[in-house]
Image (cartoon, rainbow over all chains, first blue to last red; front, side, top):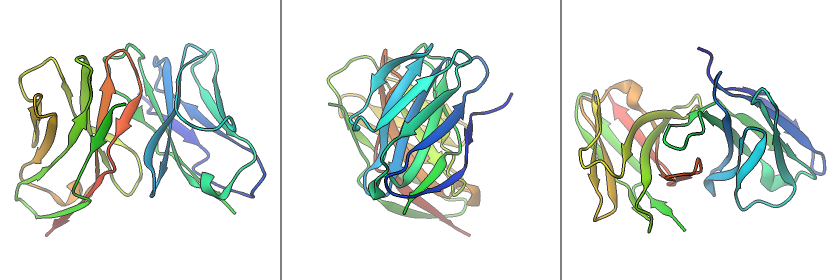
Length: 113
Length: 114
């Protein structure tokens, strides 16, 4: 059974640009959550999607957005990139029934220069 | 708001020895779950062990076991017979029942010395 797949693995962008990250969950999983990991702030929850609907959202500015497709694949978008957006972005998938554990992808390392 | 605290940023252990990683949390909820995740240099978060708050029995997974003290809001991880492959960042995490959102501690770097 394939795990959670995140693409791309590495990304370098310039300030002001926008970026789209992709996450393919484990087959059968309907919930996808996104986290930002930085040395200073640690792991912070961005948002969660379930059956194409955003079910929960963290405390991030509106420049951070996401969506989920009918096949449960999810994308997150960051517009008007800032240097502080440099981070490891992790995606996690789960069945979505709240009592099951989340499985993580290997992350996308975003560097903003 | 729920918080998770890992007070020790780094620890080291000799191979084959036992080490305990500490974690405390704060919540007013009665329905919640606690987890320990391992993040090796490959960056992928790997679930080590989970504990349901309603279960009094401490969870165990092979060499990994927890000491769940609900009244004290403490959730420590014990690694027995430490192996070189156990070297990684370890994160304690909390999830409220009915939510997928994980709240993580700051993490702790474990070094295993041969």
